[in-house]
Image (cartoon, rainbow, N blue to C red; front, top):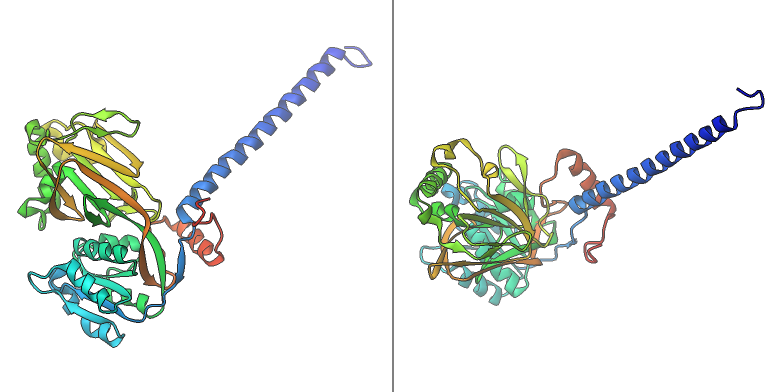
Length: 371
């Protein structure tokens, strides 16, 4: 080695430093890109809802006293509502829910509510959206999935009426299937066939498993759904099962397993099975394990059937519609009243804390601009 330094060694040293500096720069850029994506994803989950103080003066609530094995009566709902100045209408056999809601609004109600199951909520919410008045709900049904994702306490139905005393008005989405509004989901194919069975109410899981097993053994049973466009524009000729939701569901763990992160994302969550398992394996798999299981998002879905009618399950109700069937989403088309500070959607514990801070500080992407 030369006493005055080896030029070759010096050049190699400088090259090494450049490589190290370049690697550090690339790592920094990668880190910024990674955290930017993480923050944008977090903002999409926890960004504040469009929120304003409730200013309702003449609310009316329709009550299904038989829903949820008589929860409304056992909680003293009517007496509590009337003590708060809320007019109540008791649903009677043969009553038309939508007509009752329209008549209440014609009579001066500036907010319309429903105490009942998810199917009843959807009917009244549809009237509220059509008449552009706020909607509120009281969870006295059996499962109360909509109320859960709206952020209400299913174990304390009366607390939902705090929305009329010191509440907020939010803007959320609702779905449409044919001429019907839905708040949670629509099922077709195998799942819809299960909803149409009498045993579904009392033994939901067992009934779905039984129909799935029968369909796997007899493909002709579910060959009616066809001509549905997939997530990448591909056309599915035969679709045994389709589930469409008002905003996408995510795994939330027990006891509910499926929850929606947002209620105002403006998308339909779509899941479809393009094939069914061997009949002997049905009892051992979950929906996500199906070989032909696909999930995606869209703002519209069109389905045709061989039969003139399409069997569906709409928020758990057995209904049928004319084919072809159009399913869509109405972005922030429903005004809902919730108790002050209540935030819709499921968030993991860590994100829930951040979401609360964002709501208080009113920071994050502007919901009205969509940025």
